[in-house]
Structures are given as C-alpha cells and as structure tokens.
Image (tube, rainbow, N blue to C red; front, side, top):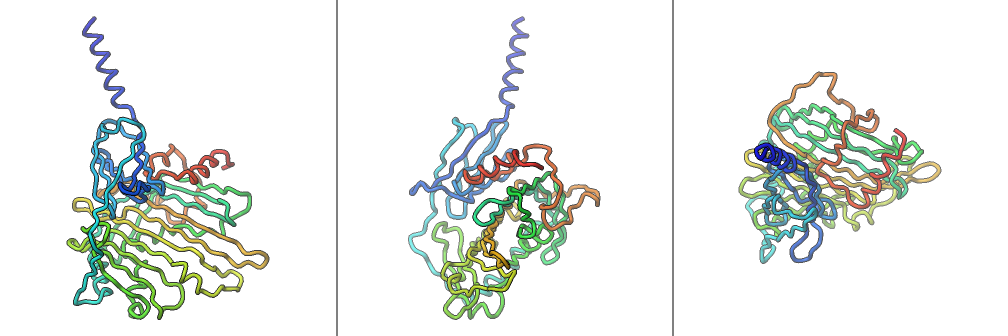
Length: 388
C-alpha cells in the first residue's frame, strides 16, 4: 500500500512539474527604470526567440526549467534561470555597457566604403540555407482609428546565396479582420511577403547610402557605440545639400566579426517639414516613416531576428483625403538549418495575408514571442466579436 501511495505521489509530482507556467518579464533600464523595447529573450530549452514590446514586456509559457538569455545592443547581456522566477511577473534591470566618451573613429577609407564592405560581408555570412519560423503582426489605422488587422505564423525556407535569395513560404495559421464596415483593402500597405526576405538579406534598405550621390547628401560618421563598447555605429544624416525625403540612418555592427547587428532609419520632423505637399489625386504625403531590423548572431548562425516598420501618410482623394497609418511587426521565433518538406500546392505565393482565408488551429498568437502593448491588446480583444 505504501509503495502504491509513493508511486501515485511521484506521478502527481511529474504531472505538476510538466505543467506549463506563464511568466512575464518586465525589462527596465537599471538607472532610469524606463522600459526597454526590442530586447531579445531566448528560452534556451526550446530555442524560442521573444522580443520585448514598447512597454518592456515579454510573456511566455515554459514547461520545466530552462536558462533564459536576454540581449540588447545597448545593454550588457543577462542570463537567468527560470527557477529563479518565483512570481508570475518579474522586473529585470539591464545595465548599459557605456563608454566614457563618444569616440569618433577615423579610417583611411570613406565610411561609405566601410559600410559597403560590411554589407557584403554580412550578406555572405547570413546562414543560408536556413528555416525561419516567423510570426507577423500588422495594424492599420484609417483617419486615426484602428481599421484593419492581420497576423500569421509562417515558415520561410531560404535557399540560394547572397543576391539570389529565394524564399519558399508555408503559412501555418493566419487571421485577417476588418475592424470597420468600410472596405479598406485597397489602401493597405502591408509586408510584401514575396520579396521581404530578399530585401532584408540583401540589406536593400541601405541602398540609398551606397550610391555616389550619398556622399554629397549625407554626413557619415563612425563611432564606438556609446551604449555598448563592443559595437561600432555608423550614422548617416542628411546635410544642408540634400533635398527631398532622406532618412536618418543608424547601423550598429560588430567590428571584430564585421557583421551588422542592427539597422534603423527614420525621416526626421525637420526633413518632413521641408517637403512640399503633393496635390494630385492618389498622391501620398508622408508625415511619419521608420523601420528597424535586428540580426542575431548565435553560435555559427547569423540570421534576421526581427523587423518593425511604421509609416503614416495622407492620401489625396477627390472628395476627402485619408489619413493612413501602418505598423508592422515581424519576429523569427525559431531558427533551424534543417529543410522542411512540402507540396508545391502548399506554397504561399500571394504578396500579403490580407485576402487569404483564415486558418486558426490554436491560439498561436499567445506563443508568438511578441506581447501586445496595452493599446494593441484592446484591439486584439475585439477580434473574437467580429464576423469572420
């Protein structure tokens, strides 16, 4: 009898320990206590990647114990054990790896040539073939109100090399919802999934800095990255000779490996203020534009981790202009060098998920690695109430 009771106790213990436990990490700056956005949190047991949102929050479920890595280009890395997370919600403070001065680096080559060399080396070192399990989320606003939403869980099988990247896309699950009765599909500007990987793996967003005119239009500076002395940063900012809509660019890179780890750009308010409004029907007057790509170096692998893009513009119409805002998120939740098998009929070949019929087999967005902000969560909570 005692043996049986002991056996039942062991089974119960195993059952309890195997249950999924939800944990919330709130990442904050050690000095300012401000939330830290775009920090990478990796659950080593499952190799799942997560990304902190604008509120510094990461939410995940874990079965059993695991080491957890927290990385951000502006902070010292942190490793924690899941067993140390006694409460459901835990604040984790990250510390800057700050240098005393912003040291400007001087090279024999022009920074444009150094950037071109970095891009070429990064393209060669990106792990291809490779498989990216990706979660994508897109919010769309019309005249200040949320009007459309879609997200999806996809597999990107990357083939080829360097300039000839080919991406085979399989959509596991997806959902698209119009939040208003008006048809907004014609105005949507979502990710073009057919060429997104080619653009990101060839760093095409940096092409404006590689043309000969860029030396005239931009001021290039290379510094030791003040927030993390392990990295350098290339800044390219439009100067007084530039005209038109030119972005402010920042490229953070590892000088030892000569690999790009982060690319971001935005159009400054000063540049936008100088632009003359277009008046022809169908024209777009941009008032906000930014993007940020993060690349991950892990062991011998180097791949796209995440992308975030935002754009806001006024579209000129015959009757009344439309104010349109789009915010896109893209996160590689898992990476593998193993190919998957598929049928040709299963390959997704459209540009976006907008018109694809919904496939919802599980609450995949809860394990997406991308926690919604409080504002975004209010939008998501309305989705179940909408007609499909």
